[in-house]
Image (tube, rainbow over all chains, first blue to last red; front, side, top):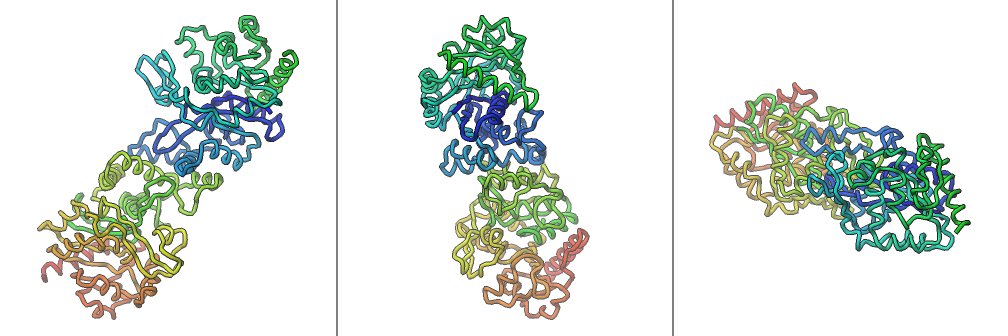
Length: 312
Length: 312
């Protein structure tokens, strides 16, 4: 078994590469739910859906979110009725939110619904929310305290970030299946995917029971840098690092994760930073342009974790 | 001012004809809400939407429900996720339900939301639910007591109907604007549209305050037959009449409304039934195939009501 901790696009893409390499049922992808929110009466889990759609082969390959071939007829009609249209919901994507909302209201857990959706969409690995308990990311900014999607989507991350709060994380229980996988003696590796270390991994690592389980796990914990050449592959990671007083770099990400890591993977263009990572490193091409790129990077991560297991 | 009482398609079409003839703001269409239900977490008002879409020119001209050029991408995706797909919801139509549900949850009234939607969609007459209070049609059948949409859509009206209940109707308050219009001295006519007398008009007339207001109104109350040649123009009206022990006919509809009526309009093919209606009648072509048919029938109704006013 391999455990991957993922946020949105970058995490989903590496998880997709891992899925291609691993036998069914030998990968558990635990996904950030700090971005989850209620909007238009619907329970929306953006990162879970990105992973779900990516691993089922239904994701839009270009846009980084939502479904391929998506239409937006509901949204256009909603705008005409004066509804809120700042958070774009595709017509097919809506079915996910409508059915999830209905099942949660009927008393099912987010993990139960997610497992079922994954099965129905043909995903052969396990996708789970980091927790069934509510954790909500709040962004402290120069424009005040903002709900995550207000900051991320409505305001396009424009406000200057001064801090993050993960409401509920202190008491949220990581999913039991995740804790069990981390404690299993045959766990091969924990992979922290190249998602935003603050916005995507932050909510997960803010759960004390999860960081404790990662520390106790006998498997190597390996992170893949979301920063290449001082820039985020996607999203506001570099901007946020600068606003938090760090110089955006792969090594700064490695030091941010700190003692949690047994290994760190950074891109060839950042090879000179390897020593500054203060942890064993693997330097490779970590950019995932194509689906074969995902499997290639996944294989390199697995191999790197293997060397760390033997070394440790 | 003219007041029209309407259910779904037939009512909407005559209301559309009246809209074409009347100056803006001189027609109030009060719509059945007994069919309203919650489905997939959404507040759905089928008859209100049929009237709204018809009067805004957005209705599908063939299907009798929903929007022209509608797509069903959400529904197909929902089916794939194992969701309930027996009640078809189009992608554009969804926006109406999502926004209505949100606004009702925020404390707005159904009438307030309906007024606003009508304005936004360019409707120049007033469309209102019969009441802001909850009335729910329950169908007593040989298959047990059924919620309306279970009977009407899921089971295609197949069970034998033995009775109807209008839950909440005894205490529901008809909309104040409707009562005010009925009491106004300059009211020209009340038109009971050719909708199902039991399923569509039944919930309205089950509100004692509404029948009382109709009786007190000084304007003639005129109904248009939904039955032509012993058959319903659309829907299960004839089937239901037979199940309730009536011979389906225009005259039977007139006698069903009874003392409420000052006049009744029936089709040329039913001319021999005029005497059996036990109320002044107007025999005309009441089938509405085209939009000009709607305006023509509307003009005939207005003229007929005019003769009744002068006679009374």
